[in-house]
Length: 249
Image (cartoon, rainbow, N blue to C red; front, side, top):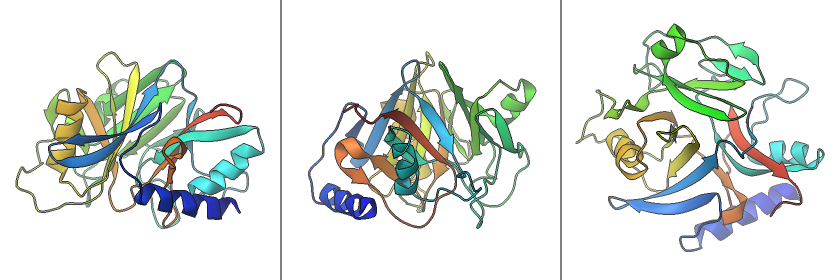
């Protein structure tokens, strides 16, 4: 039944006009639509999720939300959180509740992940940062949660040097950035197909972040129940989500 509710919510969202809740908001920048979810670092219970108790990937937002329901909790927001292999194991560095599941991968390689510089999303109680991978390795922080992805979208206020203004590669994309004071995390997904250069500009020039990280493209999905939205598709690997009590609106 909960799976039917998810599909119904997605259909409602697809047929509805731009809308927002307290957490996520539809925004337009340079003619492209985005949904941006703003996380208060000091107030939010933000977590990464990969496997259930039987070491099976959660795979879908609804599967994870069902398990949280049994604990009196629910997802206020969630998004796919990094690239993964066919078995849903993370391609790069991954830490969940202080447990390292995958080491840092510092080397260049094929695909978007290996388009250096890439980076690491690192967060825990009261802290949240997006860190370029080599900088992360020079001074490894005590992350409660971490996920590595790539490429970086914005590095110290500059767009990734390999991004092309006239690129023809346009996809739905999602990523994460951090405010300059470190107190706000921005998770964004494009609702229109965009280039890397467009997506990076949105983070840098619209959201005013100095560091932002690409999370994925073809598998980009968002769970924003306050907007009546829960994207459905093939199984995901890592998921990032903000958890709240069931009785919270």
